[in-house]
Image (cartoon, rainbow, N blue to C red; front, side):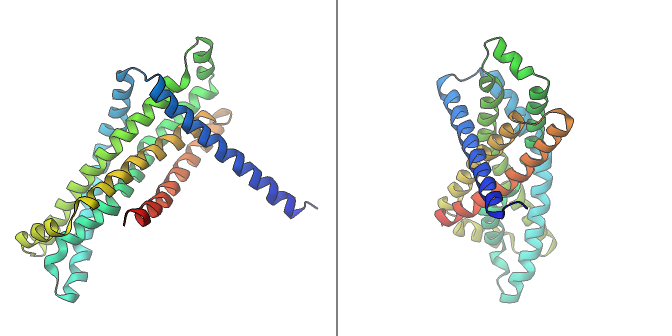
Length: 256
């Protein structure tokens, strides 16, 4: 019979080795960004892939998120006679929490999975080994541009999410339910502070690092064959989403 204590110890050591390898991967990628940045064209390609191609899904998600917040917020605030505070509720919910988190989750599902699959396929077809054979650094061409592109693109997508979501709440709250438009924007202006804005920016930047880091790592160390790539892609999306939610909690507790 297997010893439960030995199994627990082996699992703990395996997790520690995995965590150490992930940290080394990130540190080396950041070192390559600083020491030998690649050509700007590679970063622009990642900006287009991660940012521009995610615009539609971000716009659609933000629209309905803002409309749902406007609808639910209105019926909650009417119980206290505070319908005029709807703009504040929608804006603060989006800027501080929902904007960074939902935009990061959408980018993970659309771009993160593709990044893992791309690097994983290059791994199993030995294209990464071919780069090393030609004395080319794989991190410089495959990993670093993706991290830089995500760090730039995710905050921009988050800003778009916030603006579109606020106007989605405006359409439902003001145009559909009859909230005073002046009160909607006036209370928003009074309640939203610079601290709320920069907390959302910090979150979105850190989420961009998490998504690109985890997805590149899982693809770089994908198993053999199609099954290995599919497992790496699934693992990357799940781990990125969970880390985004966990890190959001810690940042919120720090930035309050």
